[in-house]
Amino acid sequence: MPYIAVLSQHLVNKIAAGEVVERPASVVKELLENSLDAGAKRINLEIEDGGKKLIRITDDGCGMDAEDLQLAFTPHATSKIRSDEDLFAIKTMGFRGEALASIGSVSQVEAISRPAENQEGYRLTIDGGEFTPIAPTAAPPGTSITIRNLFFNTPARRKFLRATNTEMGHISDQFTRIALPATSVQFILTHNNRQLHHLPENQSLIERVGMLFGNDMAAELMSIRRKDRGVEITGLVAPPSRSKPNTQGQYIFLNGRCIRDRFTSHAIREAYRGLMEINRQPIVFIFIALAPDAVDVNVHPAKAEVRFADSNLIHGQVLAAIRDKLLSSDLSRPLRGADSLTPSSFITADEEEENEISDNKQRVRQAMADFFRNARPQPPSVNPHKNGSTGNLGTRAAGRMLAKTSAAENLSPWENRGQEARDTIYTHSGEPQTISPINPEELTEAPPPHRFMQVHNAYLVAESDDGLIIIDQHALHERILYEQMHRRLQEGPLPSQRCLIPEVVDVTGRQMAALEEATELLAELGVTAEPFGPTSIAVQGYPAMLEKTNPADFIRDVLDVLSEQRGKLTREELLHSLLDTLACKAAVKAGDPLTDDEISALLAQRPAIDRHDNCPHGRPTTLRLSRSQLEKEFKRT
Image 1: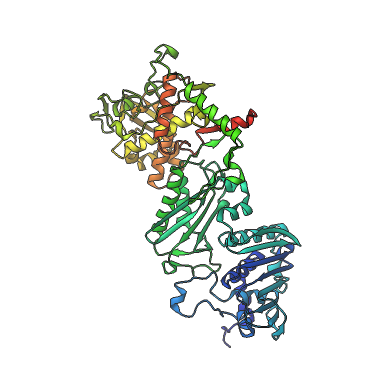
Image 2: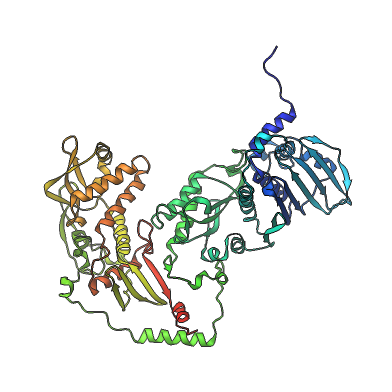
């Protein structure tokens, strides 16, 4: 007697249902996609008991005649592909042809459909895979499919369904992912006879995002657009200040289909790297458009994952589109209740709408502008005795600045500007080297604000063209140093200072192994350290910018980073992580008093630095209070 038997088609459909129909949300996804493929412009989705009791979708699409309605619930029957070539150039949301058959095998189905050119519709019922004959019925053009008692004949599957609210949450998520890109289509979602969403047809993307996620968030989004090498990237991205603790705020669409793709996800993270706290995730809505034959969507049962013909191209285009927008935008955080957060201030890439300002409000603003312009005092003169400092930010604050390297490379545009100052330092190899200052034309220096003050030896308050800015002095200086070192590394290793007597530091076995693996990387940062016995190392050189920092403390921090991130980061990512540590160590700290000249110098450097609104760890450097906010707070509007 043979052990191998051919399974019945009914059992095959139930097995297939296990792959396609995981929960009610899976049914919703398949039915919504079918409605869009049918050309529907109005789609109504009704849910009861989180989809466990009823799922009904009604659309005004092309509809089906009696023969097509019967075939639609037959396994591997589809109108969307005909040949092998079609399979590798999919233009529709669905294409496999097994979803409806799988759904019909584990539920009670009623399907009513009518093509617009027919005078009557047709009705088909299925009870757990058992078909009843199709009968004519009155119906409007389009299709209505009702799913009742999902998994009623597979108790093992039904018992794994979660609470009503949980299942409804999954349905809402699928509804959002499908309705979001289809802005030309009207969608209505109701649960237990209560309307949750009514999305009008022919909306803009920002309007649909506002209705699905809230106008407050939508008002902060920035449009992106990039088209190159056959790939078009569009969408909306949130500033780093608007983020989530997880990736649930990231929506990636390929030719209208919501997908998961690790290359695109990595590009998103890279675009925000250094602008956002490491434990936060950005909010983005990314739309990728490319030729259907440049991607394979047939690699996942639920069509959620795809395979690009050139993943690196997609990665680069997404990264560039987001990064260009972030670097060209003002990412400073509004102090509170900024005008840009009002729902009426939606801004797209192609158009900007400004609210009309009353004559009285305009006069107030003009008066304030005249006051700020005419009443500005002259910049403060150098006071060599204030705080016991000469006003050289590069050599103060306990060595937390670019000490010798600042003067040698002229990285600080306020220090000896235009002079051919030279200084002798030692490179990581121990050889003396003379460094010429960077050409001043390489730095774009803007004049610092004329009025500023330091608060609690930690924050700088300065006048801006449109109000006030409040700056975290440590965070801003940390970003400046990070960018300077990053640029300096492109020319060669950072300058190193030799220890007259090597500093011996005790280390763990894990730290020792990390040191041996990263010797060349550390040399680029100006760190020279060698094993000195089984449990200690000798530090022979460390970055010149840290000349007054304890070498042992610094090297321990570096080894902690190396041992913790070992094997988790690429070489470039690890280098950036070490630069973060180096910049943090060298920057002025909260509590360090600064002279007027030092504050002026720090503020002057700010506009010349990319990504100056966030420190390398992602924390904000700047808060802003606009002039219009001041007017509102003082009741001058």
